[in-house]
Length: 301
Image (cartoon, rainbow, N blue to C red):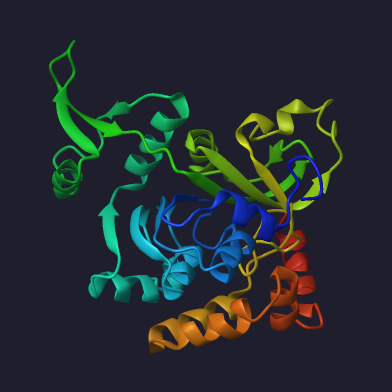
């Protein structure tokens, strides 16, 4: 640890992610996924995990391909136009990973309840759906009535992950976090979690946000560790920093579609590399791809 809340990825994961943990996963589809932290979980072989989130995309599939996931609770699991999560789908079909299906709103509501310190929150979402019956049977939803109007509603049990992992634009050394662009479920998820690890593109000095507190998306009180890692979401994007690497995502998906080749890909590109910088050097030795992705993002914003 370099001081205060600043850790290396290896230090933060070793300290705060335990075998069998419930892990709240940040990112959405191909945007701001916490890849540096997920890679480190894979290197350290921390298994038996329950991974929870709204759209569990590339990070989840890598963890499943590495054999580290026992259960997921999620709104969806896919890479949208790039296809389903093939390792996850096969593991579910083989009975190796159990699944708790939610709607996105239901998952976000469970995080919101946890963030508020409440045992549950009421909603009218899910009424009349088959999904509700499954959630009731699983024990994290209950159908009830509004005591004032008598109308039906659903009570959704709070979700409080053991650890939340997200990637953000920047942080100060105290753990104040700035996210630019869409935040999705992440703010409530971090507040609901027992601890949170946040990797960022840049760590700035203490007091950097003192004269502009409105920029802080997540205050330091909710953050246990910050990890500085430029391109830490690669191959997914970070708003105002870099675009997503379509070639990398397509290559990964082609391997996933083919079968078990993902284990070999992880062995070479993740497990055999010392850290995320080494992974980036393996995938993009000249840095030209990263430079192009940064240029693409600048052209968009």
